[in-house]
Length: 589
Image (tube, rainbow, N blue to C red):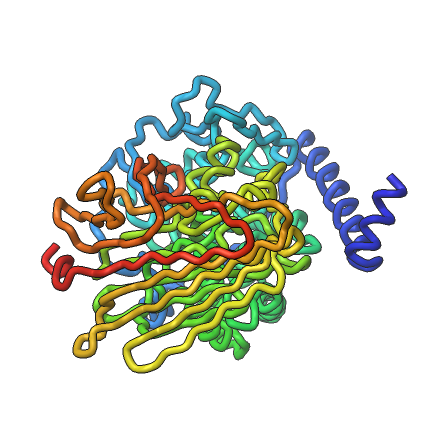
């Protein structure tokens, strides 16, 4: 244990190491306190002043939102038809439900028999991890317990919210384990009260007081904090705004903004390596801006939103992990076109008004960044033509439910890139949310002249093994329209190791796209969409088609295919893939 402590001090420094130890001791003591209070059935209650504050501020906030809702780009604010009685939206998908009273502690979407958690005290929850075969997934009951029912009717909301509190007593089960989930539920309780008024004010005030105590006691701090801490703060901000004084609310909002800024890279992207978690953090900032405007507080929320907005505006991105999560509502994307280089995030994107989009990934990662939501996707690309996705990121699909699927979806072998066995060795023994790979000294740049864009990425992930990889994209645009006409992908490998190494290429296509050769010996592959040839991809390598999987949203999986090739690299190797878009082929589809 002493050796382990010295190792931590050497790698993290004295201050960080002992701060981590202090945080663990503090959370341990809070857990003991909560368990004693749970056993004695002692629950915090809202004071009369907090009840009055909640009542008044709900009324004022409702008027504020009615007047200013056009300023905030929540999709929930759009007038949508309510879902039918037995339909529920989870992970941006619609599912059929029956008796909601039996769903709070189960993965009701799995087919496995043992689909429930029998946890009595929430902080003692043991999360099951499926290994080779799918098991129950804790995110299903957690997602349901977020109470994100804005698009349901009042009868359903009232019944469901009352059912939650009947079957989920404070501190008592799996829905009182994760502060982030508690924060999201607190935010949604406030928004549901604004629209449907399902609860009496004194009862709601008591419940929100309990949510506030739990989040405050188990705030998810760490040496490399992530989106959980930011969402915790969003929940605390709402609770302090509605239950407490303006001074305390202002202090909490300003502290939250400092934490948000710490997790942003210089180019305005979330430092977690995921476009979808960037969107979640971006939504969190929108909430802080709403609360700041409501209280008439001046702060940096607007400037941070402006800094984060460019990545969030890109339509087809699915970089890194995607758990289809949101706090209250997805944010409507603002249109932006052109060439975008997010140098610190490690991403180039070109898009235009015709629905064409090309991305290339090549990131670096430092020791202060949380690695849990990165994928092993360096030098991977995606291509969309006229809003039709051709080559895609494979997605995420699952976390705790199946470790094998989790690893497969984030592996380099399933992204649209090229790799060797040494790349796969970097993935060995990865934890569920902690990648082992290191990425340093990688570069990404672009040059645009007239209607030609050259993007260059040099990758040193295997520098220790003597291998350097390079991928270049030459994007040719039509002179008159600016549509993508041709994309030339050039890949190079420099191998200074003593042994020749096999490299494999993989291009993961969207499930609606088929790739086939006109004849077995052909070096040209046809890209087919709805039985129509929309593009050709030419290469000197021998190619084949393999089966693959694609996940658009969490727990959503589709069969697809991938174009593959391989080559033995001795010292230096260079190859190319030329994608020619058939003019007008996609405009009518």
